[in-house]
Image 1 (cartoon, rainbow, N blue to C red):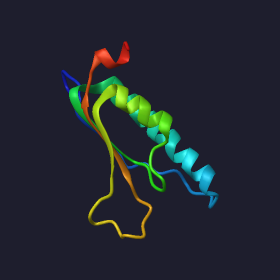
Image 2: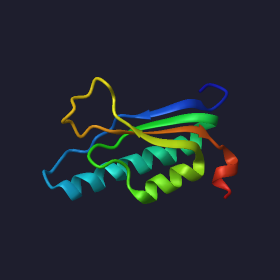
Image 3: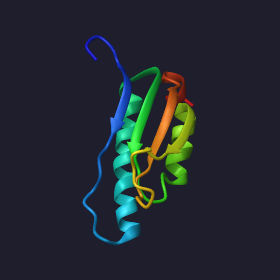
Image 4: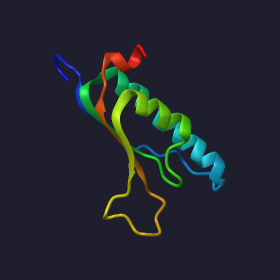
Length: 103
């Protein structure tokens, strides 16, 4: 990043789980929202954002924001992940740059 922004921001953060599914999902989404805000501050136009979301994936508000800021947004499950695992990632490609922030 010396002298410029980043091309990729990856977040593998996960909150400590409580065992209460809704609480755990809210905590994870909060981390992803923070990581996405950070990504929008430092990504170069065309950049990529990848974040762990688990369980049902990213929530509608988060996805809507990512779709405004990036050209392509989708959920992906790593091939190495167990089939019964709730591990999921949200992948956002093609950061729109300063134009997205002013919209």
